[in-house]
Image: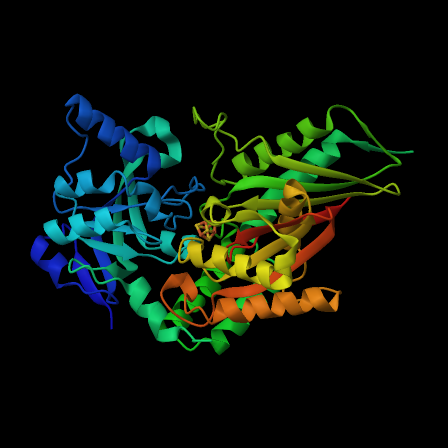
Length: 184
Length: 280
Ligand code: SF4
């Protein structure tokens, strides 16, 4: 049975989610991938304010296809999260509560997640047409010139994810793999 | 001499970019279905089910299977009795990519300079491999390559004494290092022999062979089979979350090499194993 959560995601709810939980997300999430992360950190370095408040928010690592006429968004599946690892601890320190992507994270990300009480979800990589169906609205927030890499505000309904890393540091990639490894 | 006009090439490439991105080849879809029946992990079966549903949606609505519609790799077999008329051959292919990605609502993922990283805005240029063959045919294969899986690939120059066991070990090492990142289940393309770049091209070409069809050389077929078994015993599973389906197939191609060398390239391909072919 999947749990449904509604954003914004507070620390208590985030800490209650455990690796392996199936979760449906309702509400607002933000998109952001390589270039947007680099921009945010550059701005922070210069002391400039960010175009969005990350407190208790979820970032979805995605660079969607352009939408066809009449569509809210083009196909929009997760991208590899590891490329964001260098930037992520700084975002978590600023209140980011959840991330959606695919693939493993660095020890630094896991440590910061444990400290601040954040959660890392994975969505099914390559299921982009299916996932786009759960996005009901999309609006540009910042960095429009980055095209697919811009930050967008998405409204989602029953957005399907799995908790891969919880705030205790449990890692579904390790747990799941151990269960099915065949010793030779 | 048979003449082929560049407009024909542009039109074909445009079509193939869209077809490849919307419509997963039947053999790959069938391999996913078979994997779902075999998969022991409940979550794994669910994930494989989502992938099947996704393929059906993309096909029906003519939208991309995956948002990473890749950098476009084009393999050309150009008959030596063909004369290309009306313009430049490479420009004709790139114009086809430009139109396919723009008119097909596909994502533009190519940056012009690998270090300055400014998006070219139309997914050009393609990576083009041309082989001249006898006859007056022109065969095109368009393969959009997502970077999630491409990034997990590897090349190694082995010592010949390591032999087939060394090759199997290296294939496994690459898959293991890739873990969940290339969206398993994956297809593993392997190139053995030649030189460093020859092995890499063979590894990519191996991905287009009908899925699960063993190599015609028995010792290579055996190497493919052994590697596949070992990979599927790893426990990585669908999306790396645990299960018995890590790879749908391991496909190898070989080429003569130097007395002192054993180059091996492993090209990792995600389940979105997209390619379209056309004979002009
Ligand atoms: S690895 Fe393949 S399926 Fe996964 S996001 Fe990239 S292109 Fe899509």
